[in-house]
Image (cartoon, rainbow, N blue to C red; front, side):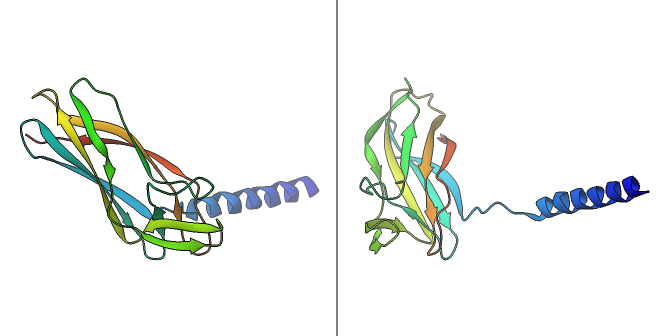
Length: 155
């Protein structure tokens, strides 16, 4: 009799944990979108846009060592294209953050990064790579995130 009650209690506890896990949500305060524009037969610009939920921010590419993880872009090597210069960004907000004991530069709401590329082939159809970024609000920071991207280059 005791074994049957114990099994029912364990089953109920397991069911409770499983159902609680089903309602847990992963925080995702940033969504990324991509685009590209050919500006000539030999050059194009790719756009990487972060849309950031209210109260959150992502960091600039220029954060100094010792601070949060800066946003960075790694473009996959290709025989069809090469990078022209560095990935550019608009002017960020810069403020002192006590969590890092330093001034840091970041973006709120949205930001579009741009990378100019030289087209070495008329057949270039996509630019691939990976981006890394860190998201924080005034209470916490989420672990850095890596995202693979593939940006089609229209004709």
